[in-house]
Length: 321
Image 1 (spheres, one colour):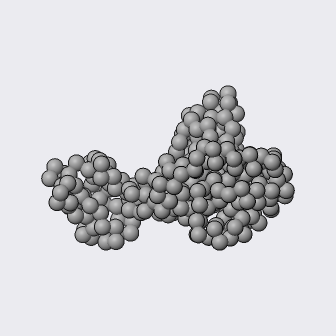
Image 2 (cartoon, one colour):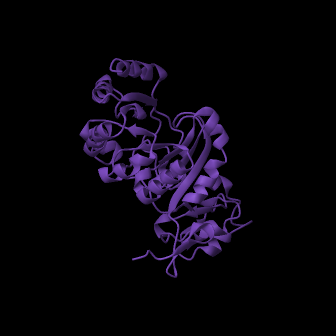
Image 3 (cartoon, helix red, strand yellow):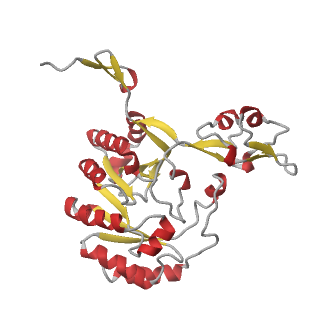
């Protein structure tokens, strides 16, 4: 029996037996070009929304939810007297005016989930949205603009987030499209995902950056919201299913969480037993301002990690390399 005839229309849509099949879409909150910290060479990093962890130090809190998300930057607000469009657009009573500053304030508890009418009405972009639906072709079109830099530097495309495996269908299609275009591919992952997701992505990956934050269950649950068991088990399976030389395990060193010599020694020893390269990342607060924009609290406050302490812990890890 012959297969039904099909053809492609605009935007890569496939028509089959009179029905249109929409192209795969992903929810993207940023695409960063010319990156040199997310794999070899010069890279284009695609940041995807959705993550199963809630790390207290996360520099991308806008990635946690899989849906589009509103944020408010009071510094950009031009005031209700001069504007006020968001007040008229909001039909849920979620926006009021601060009597002292004249700027609007958000009552997120009254927001209708997914409404975002206020963001569409704001001319100053003080109210805006994290997250945009994009097709595989739209993302790859941006990535291909830098193909010359990839060729010269050994760079390529990196999937990040959030957690790329949280949008498994889109991630799989995006990696497959990149490979067809002969673009080097990498993925940054927290490791907390079903193994079946990893197995689907491995054929399309040239390199994996794998986060291993702690092996202490109590601490891991307190600081990330989940236990470390699945993450550890997946890394062991990955070491047997993917060339260890193409895996880099990274541990962010976080004050009060995993910043003791014992913590780092335990992690480094485990990684060394798998024959995988291990790196430490120094704690920073670069993303802390985003918490306020999202109406959240950055729980680590003014926590800090000195350069001397980080160097000491890096020396501990180096003993196992």
